[in-house]
Image 1: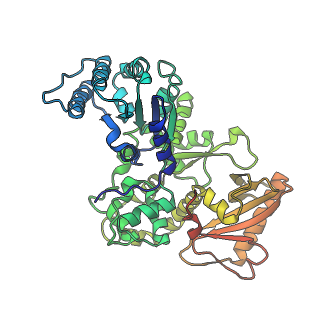
Image 2 (image 1 turned 90 degrees about the horizontal axis):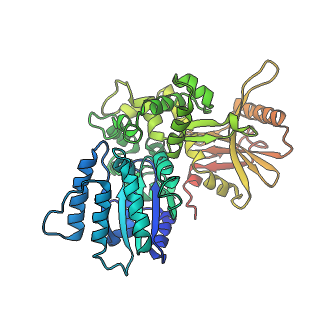
Image 3 (image 1 turned 60 degrees about the vertical axis):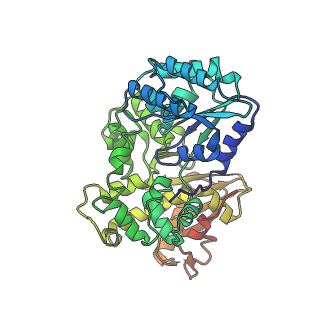
Length: 480
């Protein structure tokens, strides 16, 4: 079955603008592994691509040179083998000679995929690319697309290149996982008609990664699909974690140690807390690793309400990594019914609360739309204060601080039915509001909001307290 092309309207628009511009263009595309970057380029440019090569992880430069020669033979239609380059300068010279034979009255595309793997074994690759662009391509009707899954490497070595490619990138695209609405469209295009609740459970376990989602079976429930992918003997995602980070980062042990540390914290961790929990050395390399994980979409950085830069919190945002560490790794569960069994355990309740909160944080525009404040300038943050001898502690999942002198104080609850607020929950929320007001001294009106899977049943405890209710359905809204 062919993979349907879903969403990516803004990304396609950028690529199309590059194709239609009167000048040569160099487009840098970044995004985590398996997110569909290559598919985006090939779908949008189709027959305009006149040369393409993808790097292979760990392959020596000589192997890449053989592949380069073969690609030139295939794209040029040569009937005899093309000589293998003896250097990257030689390779790009051969590419120029081939491109000179083409009719460039219609703009053509050169696509270099997984650039970090092409350049990893030999720094002269970037000098060769600089030569190709500066000495030839920039004066011709060409789009050069460079793409990579190691987002931080791409930004440091290409976007912020200090050599011949300095300020040469004309357009940049960051391809992110699907939203809930895009996930739904993608699954429906493949004949998978899951309910919103099922899609949310799948999303919380797998994320919006197309390469994972395409493995789902339409003749199985969400629970059965998770069993098949994550717990069956040959499950597609049973061992993905061990490959994921080592494919993107050199010396990935530190990256994984940080991911493991963040998986244990619901409210997130500061840099010092991460260093302590992950048991890693305190040095400049730690900042680089955190940046690489953030740029690649595995973690997110957040500023708690009213806090300074030093108080920045890091939070694990990759759904699959959290799910793997919580349920798959070192577990003795296998085969049919595993996830159905695990979903009845206390561990499931803890995980689902955290995972649903993360899901909501990735859909802030949909939350603002549901509140009717899309046109109001606002910032999103969280609030956490530890208990002290003379002061209660409190944690607020999400705050939307609005420019119209209102702060939405948002509670997030994942439940398999309509939520009914209890006396204890109402008292807890009122206490949170008091703690927040006292700690921040805000004079803005606090407006409590509940995000719950199937909504909130009105009763004596919610009445006069909860001013707006957002459901899972609202998170599936399509944003233009």
